[in-house]
Length: 256
Image (cartoon, rainbow, N blue to C red):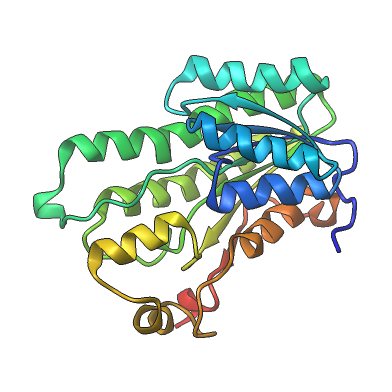
């Protein structure tokens, strides 16, 4: 059962067409939020939106490339135009981690990944914070980081660098915006059963059975909804005294 802890609030979720973003958009709608589903994948994003509405939630879709400042600005404005304001944002959009060591990294993919995972998060923060400051009354922003932002993994230097950067952006924005009653936090997922993780397993030739125990004290992959629950808590007034924090949803991986 999901309690209506976001009842009447307006939320933007990026990368909401699948995986953790989809689970977050669905959970937020269940919790009473009016959700703007933002993603570059228009077909899947519209399908998720239609399913949320069919289930009794309130949602709309906007195709957005978070690496494009004008599109991110339009995304925030679309939420305001559609629902009257912005209260909550979850900046989740990201690319699949790179797969080469630092000495051999693909420069083109580095640029693409940094543009989405790091610059995209920064652009989302820029325009979301401007709107929250402008309208007054505070708000909550959640950035999706990764355990790779704390324990670097080999062969994905771009992803590791980007997620370290997301942690820094989170803390900087929290320090800057506390006076506006705007809370900025992050969630750092571990091994979550998403299309991105499945793709990485296939890429590196691992099975879930042999890989999950390496990444989880619970011996299993997490589910996207388990990450969404952390974002929901941070987005809601239940976490009203929490800002500048990173919550690890990693089954103890970073505790080892």
